[in-house]
Amino acid sequence: MDGPTLLHARHEGHAHGNSNNVKTGYIIFACTFLAMCLFSIKNSIVPRVPRRYRRLVNPPLCVTITVWCTFALVFSLSHLRPDGFVGIAKRAGRVCYAMLPLVLFLGLRPSPLPNTFYLQTVHLHKWVSRVVVLVGLIHGILYFIFFVQNDRIPRLFKFYNFLGVITLFMMLALGLTSLKPFRRRFYTWFYRLHYPFAWLTVILGCIHARPGTNLLTFWCVAILIGQIVYRVSTSKTTNIEEHAITHNLKFAILPRSVMPEYFPVGSHLRVSHSLRNPLTWISPTHPYTIASHPSDSEVRLLVRETKFKFAPSPNSSFGSGQVSVSGPYSSIDDTMFNTAHQVLIITGGAGLSFGAAVYRGLKINGINEVKLIWIVKAKSELSALQMLGVDSNVSVFVTGRASKNRSATADDDFDLELEDLLEEDNDGTAKDAFELLSEAEEEGFDDFVSSATLTPGEAATSSTSIKDKNELSGISIHKGRPVLSTEIKEFFSDAEIAAGNSWVVACGPEGLVNDAKKWTEKQSTDLIFHGEKYVM
Image (cartoon, rainbow, N blue to C red; front, side, top):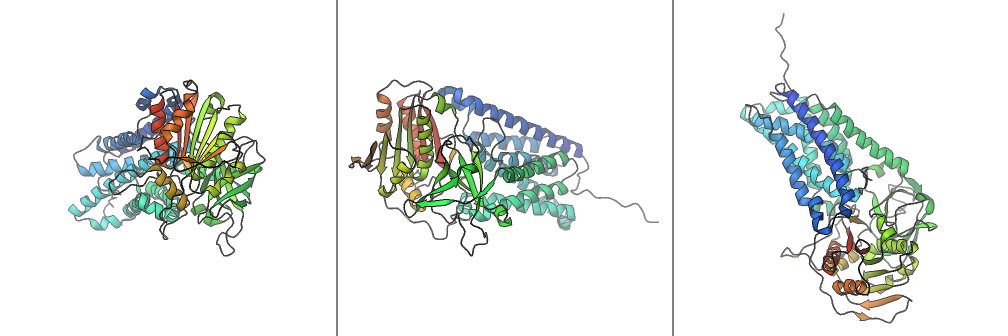
């Protein structure tokens, strides 16, 4: 009779101390749950905290990421045993998988957290994902070194170990394709890898890992399925009617029934081809700000031309001209519409969709001390104001700049929600806000913005504005760029600024929003600033 058969662990030495790794995974899961609770509480109290103390409860993104890196490092190095870096490798693998529920949770839209918008979590989702990829890479590299040193390379191709190798390469692919240079040019491919690889990472990672991952896998799968169920249950299939304003700017009109009876002013919706087509599920959705008011009889979007077409061509693989619409997704607190006394709205280009929605929402609520500034490249687009019901106390600045063309190889189908539209000159300094605006106008970026905590940028240099002959009642037209410091000062100079009730709202490229924020803070500490910046 043969002797006893020896059973080998999936990773050498896994049996020893496995219970500690399982316990660590559950501790990490509990810590991430607590962190999300604190994140929601922070979002609730920040608007009520005086500005001089606000950074204490709302730290910059770089500080938050440093905290998560430290968190992952501490748990990876805890309870080290005599097996040295192999022990670190085991613990790093557990940390990596235990943080997956957090990564997937942060990617949910809308965010299920109270007082939290999806656009507040997307940057955190991106960077925490990169921390997880880094920890997973450490896990793989250390085990590879171990196998090389012990002349056990063939063990990499054992079934369970090889699943780990596949999982690591998928995570690296997600991390690399999420970097700005790749994502900007090939967003469609990034998106098509993103969701299938997320599912495979969860499933293969569960099989590869040692026992004790059932709870973690359950929550990962629940989050992924929950997102699918939410999208199917809230999406509506409809046709879109288009009305051209200029050659690359148009109104898209949807039936009022695609949105609920009430939706927050300034919300956005997401458009994709019909969910009945399997290709839709691996293709990006396209976000657009709702430019109309909930009381209107139709839903209006102000959009730029891109490669994404609401009605596919007859040869398109998407077939039917119908689209699927989901939303709304809010991005601004309703408090302003009930308590504000004075509001100055500064918008750039297609950001008018958000500015016009806020403008009308305030007017309908009886707040009359409202002014809208719109910076646009071409005077031919001014008819958009009347079509959106914005007809008084409006200043339009027509820049008329020529700008560079986008590379013909760039992918126009990217989802504008992942990265700031802030280019840099060769010296590393941010470009002029209005140069960015002109480039964004010329390039035809989708109309989409996200709420974010902004840091002051360089002030825009402005030429003297020359008032044009006014053809529209209540609308003054200027040539050149506005001096934001002057515009803000003049608007708030005639009345005493009411603390907590006076607002500046800016929407457009990041440079424009940062300049508006900078001059708002210089004008008065009692002013409240809300920034919506173009991102991609």
